[in-house]
Amino acid sequence: MTTPPLPGWCDSAPDATFTAPAVCSRQADRFARRIRIRNGIEYAAGALVIALFGASAIAAAVKGEGLIAASLALIVGGTLVILRNLARRAGNDERLPEEACLAHLRRQYARQYAALRAVPAWYIGPLIPGCVLLYVAVAAGVAEVAGWRAALSGIVQPVAITFGVFGAVALLNWWAAQRIRRDIKRLDALAATSISA
Amino acid sequence: MTDAIEQLYRQAGAQFAPALARLARSVERDAEKARDLEQEMHCALWTSLARFAGQCSLKTWVYRVAHNVAADHVARSVRSPQRVPLEEIEALPSPANVEADAGEALVLGQVGELIRRLPPIDMQVIVLWLEGESAAAIAEITGLSAGAVNVRVHRIKALLASHFQFPETGETP
Image (cartoon, rainbow over all chains, first blue to last red; front, side, top):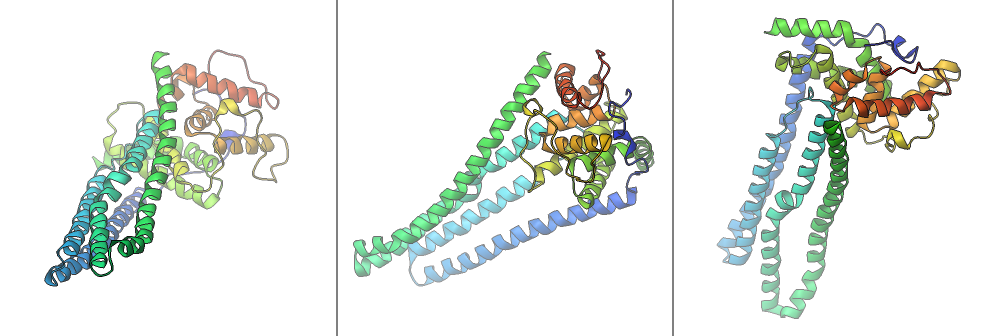
């Protein structure tokens, strides 16, 4: 350490002290509890979807509506896959703030990039087969009564809304991921000059 | 084990608590949020010290933890100014605190505002330089080369040149 270049900068906060270790322990407990609550809410939402769609699938099967029952069962399966992905992702959150700043920043960017890129495959993709089959089943049911023209014209709007929302979410995540990828490239270029220097 | 960690923590506190407070206040304008950030740095350091086995000096460890926590805080902030790399900044911005209207206080206010507008790595280099750390120490903390650190320090010196005189030596600062 040498003489600080700006007189006055180091004059502020001379009496600052560290937080007591006991407070840090309580803080860590609070943080762990917050994570548990967040995970609990996600799993409860998943359980609600599974219960509702599962019950509907059973009811449809009992009524002999096999295609509807299969589509609802696929949505339940998709939700289970999403919950497994959430659990796996939550377990990968290792924090190492003692890394050199460049490495830490790159790790954070890479984690965010991977999370954003994973949204279409991990969180939207598992629901697509069930949704597609559900619309096919509903359209087939309407077509039996009123013909395919009426069935298709009635289903266009809900299909457009559902897949439009899925597409918009995927697009927004892709766009955010591209921005982070540019940041990663900038950091890699900086790291390369640091290694070669 | 816990006693050794506590001793290291107290040692770090005695040496670096003011520097971490200044870091928190320079990246976070809101005083209450700055205090929360300061505490977050302390607690991240407290937790991390269980992994400290002399891989680097305690100073390097403390600054890395603090600066990384600060960078994570900046990344989480919803409302923050557009980040501009140091090489693209032509002049010091106006200070956020309008009362900082004279001499050194004005420049310190402007420097604080500049820091909040920089991308994380530039911000880290400048704050460490202001703390009086050498280019070699800053390089070890950030993972940049000493050359890359010197480029950034040269730039901030140029921005501050109209307000202060810096000795032209080979070593930062």
